[in-house]
Length: 360
Ligand SMILES: Cc1ncc(COP(=O)(O)O)c(C=O)c1O
Image (cartoon, rainbow, N blue to C red; front, top):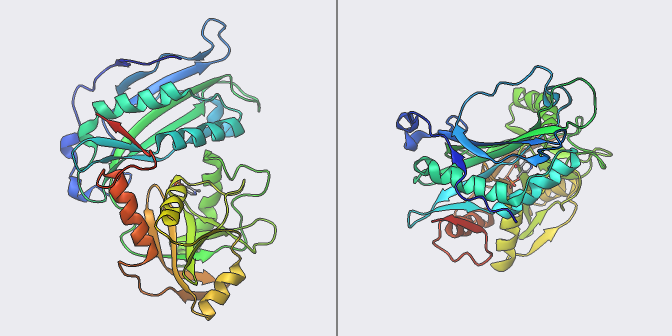
């Protein structure tokens, strides 16, 4: 197996780090100094596969207007985080799980898969070089964006022969400042059985923007997607999976080919089972949520994802009516789970599940 020691690196002439106020980082506004880049060529018999990756200063790409990804959408990404641990070291959280999902997405989009060596070693060396970009502030993290796109330049709907894989990073703070307001969507859909809902491909996100914009114009932060056939069952929301606490049990829709199988979802369910919270992964109908509001048996609703971690939901709009969740407090299940997750990621609690990849 190939081991990538000492990836060729061209350092940025100057750093943008001094422009960052780590106490007001925001989300998605800043990008670190370097990126990792490698190309895949199937057409060249002398160089089939991925080239040696390189780390270069973050900068613009020069690509042909005929680049296939720009037209037919063969493009896949991941979203993950690295954390500054309590002892100052850096932890890339759940690297393997994100890598597996990345390749599952690439496979579905008929794109060249990436080797674990390039993904892991490339990411580690990139983050080591930009280590000062990893925030040390509470709720701060280094967001990591690995992605790949069809880079062959030609016309015609068929899989590209060439791909480019890039990783870049940027420091981020909290995504939502307060509990959010979401609307159950029963007109538009995000994913249908047999489609690409489980893949983290660009098209899935493009298709959600218009219905999300309509919901935002109506005063909501985002939508809750329902199943494409009947709009009866809850799927997920924006860039988050969903969890509810109903009659004291943690309830979440099951993983399927119409939902992105979230890494945060998996981490929180694992922790919940371990701390004795009763967990049910099963279909959740809109009717069940309505009844639970009427009977006052729903006590929590929240989104879970890498960006937000846990996003408390204050209001759910169902068929034109808004339903309020109770005011939340420290003892809510969502915050207990989040505290445990934070403790593992920062090294304060033991990494009993082997989720941390620590950069020494
Ligand atoms: C559509 C969608 N669902 C769920 C999630 C949550 O997944 P994760 O916890 O792996 O970030 C994301 C974010 O990546 C997403 O984009």
